[in-house]
Length: 171
Picture 1: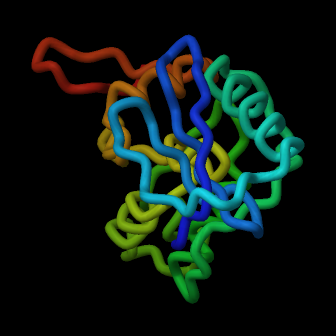
Picture 2 (picture 1 turned 180 degrees about the horizontal axis):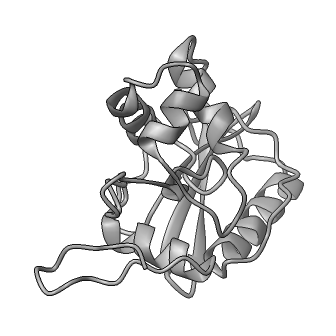
């Protein structure tokens, strides 16, 4: 992905960077993640920047979002692309396991490949990989960190408190 420009968006949860190409929103950098280098001679259209900031804040508040933004996720082929499409169908406030997503895509033994596709997702929130969890009742993984995954799911009404071993479990 070649980021051309990025904007900073202050939220109640910290400072995010939203990265754009001329085709649309290309990546989200959570607080503490470095923003990629960008060319300084182009800015995203104001309408994109405004919509992206509004949608980001709504996602963080746990609100239902129907995105109006063009997305420019890297063009993936095959299984990874199919995973990203499947993630966009998981409703707010619901989760599926990595194995369930794999089975729905016709590859029931590909739960780890679903996890790898989630990890490679440059647009968490818009492609909601936080809604995919482990089959054992745990959170699984999340590139921005499990605290973010727990927070986003809680805002959607899905709770994963830590047990006495410090491991997240689904209620």
